[in-house]
View (cartoon, rainbow, N blue to C red):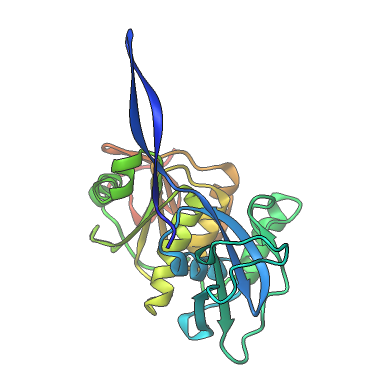
Length: 284
């Protein structure tokens, strides 16, 4: 199994002094995803929770809707040599067999080249593609979240980031209930991978759609992260940093509550503020 961290030599500078030292780095390796024997994606990720990552990725791309559609996932351990004749790490390839009757995806996506197979040539077509592939709606989810719970999510997420403590270089995504109880946390060098690992865990546990749940992420909120939350049926997404304009547009059109700059006791709620606004709050 591939390692999640690596050690390297560094020259550590501190004011006017310099000393040789060792440092821990977050591992980053390619993961090839194959469905029905065909490569559909290659993503750079931190090894670990790979089956969750694959399940979440296939969900967000519209290839599967629940765990019953995943017949089997396995590492490619039977053949250590690729078509080019070079030896490969068998734990960097996951092969997926879908259940009988579930069509193999016709698309192919390489995350070193594209952001999402649902993206079109403009923002509107990207949003339309997400809605066309939606399994369920989050707009009618009646969940309510107090501001205090919203404020608490980043700290609760950070407290459980074990790999970040040793490397300082990983994103995190956490799934919470409306009371702020952490159900699952995943870390990765890629924020989209961290979210895929989190919703993939929920898919494999048979928890979808994630009605009444909250998703917290350690970085910014991009279009892709809103897409993934909506695909899992999550009605609330909270990010430590800023959202993008297209992320806000998608959240608004999906009926998803999107909060950004959730730090300390402050947050900006960009869409569906009725789920979190305190009594007496007035609009602009």
